[in-house]
Image (cartoon, rainbow, N blue to C red; front, side):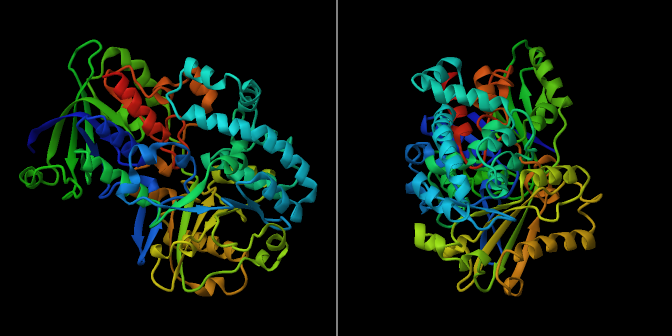
Length: 551
């Protein structure tokens, strides 16, 4: 095996998910030479899309909201690279398994309250109190997440908003269940609120320090919800196009084998990244054709650089990739070596259907008459049991079981965007929580796991009018073991920064909340870093600002 040195780059970004691409795009915009290394054959990670049974299937959720609260779409001119959004209002529908009906969550609070009164008249006063308390907090959280956390910057943001800041601090110390119980009584509101918060981090409603997860409903009133035309992956395609247009390089089908530091030097920073091509990569338009031809599968390549941004699993970077780290990084490395990866908790079904299903509750026309809610199929619907059942489902997951009625995130993106499905067909997606990494021993048992996966479709069919299952032409299930194998996620776990803005303010786990490490030139970004939730991009933008500040 040969080892050759490639032209220098100012920065190497390890991982081509949306945060890594956001970071790279900002660095390219600032005039830096950047190379993104991605193990898969295409960029996007869990924010991307796959081509499956003639459809453009989103890897995870198709709805984007938090990202749209940032100026990055305009700052990076992503519209010039093909990004367009379809706006959704209501941005989401909450539906309890045992609820008398759905709750459409509109941007407008009063319209939401009017709709709530149809099925939950006794919850209107509580929701009004919740909105008054939570919406200012949600706005403050979005502002805090839009910049690199520091006591001074956060204090300036909180200045003049002392009530929201004080409540944010109080909520951050409580459990999400405790917060929600202080506003709502009915499981039809409690369960979907939990499902949209800490449940998507794989946590219980009683977990201390999860109180800010109760902001899930409030965020629907302050963050516009939309879907990229063509699927979620259009966002990451646009970001990749922006990187390449600015002169950056993207090396796909390439696995990092090492992050090299200066040998035997106290305070020695990074000096190179080694990688191995696993297949003929595409998307390296910035590379010379002769250089591309020279790269062969399984050849180890060394890229010299003074800055590396890790946009993938931090533990893997510290424990597996680092070579010759300086002594002052030993405590950090030991801490991450002792931190064992959590097991996955989410699976997803994608189905091609020949005709649109019909929700059982859509026959009730009261919501249409009262608030004009007639399109029940376009918004994503969160289906959940009550908090006690969610916590029981969490306990089941630890035993390798799945609840009889799990939490479901259901959407049919082809209703508003026919481009994602074949003509005359529709694409339906169902995210399923909680699903364990070890299902009764292993997902590798074809008979048992196929039966369990099929059960999810059967459970979902009970929410629709008869005939739904007959309309399913093709379907697939993506489980934690698939996320591990295909997306390089240890144990299929989707990392997320769980500390919240208060922990970031205090500098807990500074490599995650400040993006820097004790190794000069080594930075972190991605879902594991602040704010790290869903398709947001704030972490990538903040990390780029940190890198530029240190130049």
